[in-house]
Length: 156
Ligand code: AMP
Image (cartoon, rainbow, N blue to C red; front, side, top):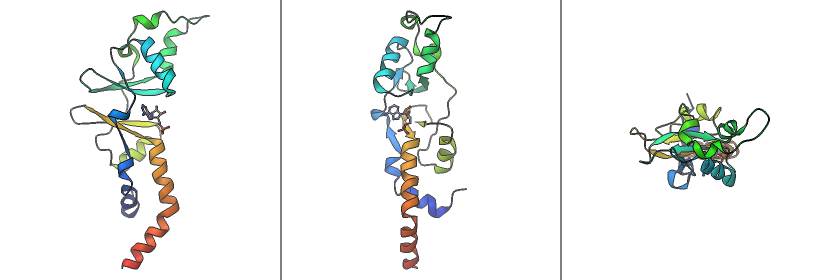
């Protein structure tokens, strides 16, 4: 379990944890792989969330999931990308979280995942939590925990 003092300190920065859905680049399940390939190439992200028409979270799409389809035995064939959709290759078995402030769960999952989609109980896509934002908070903690302890001690 995370120490109460550390969790209280980190929660001071909680407004930065969640990147809201409106600021997250996504593709839709029925987008063609050609479209998805262009989106990922332009953005420079190797993996992004996939949503349904009704804004429900569906999974994640990565560049290798697309390039895998293009790679033939001794050539690259992009023609199949027009015929296939994101739904054909996306990963639906990804970790998600309901509560963007459950530090215990988030820190545990961010060890393996670059980002975590946040979804509501009804599967609505709420946003993402990235490893970068969590690392920034931990960096701030590492540099300032002593000062906050001094303040707490002086208040006793
Ligand atoms: P970061 O920790 O900022 O490097 O982000 C980790 C991963 O989260 C990135 O590699 C992307 O896959 C994803 N990501 C971060 N920000 C966004 C965004 N605004 N839209 C879509 N995906 C993002």
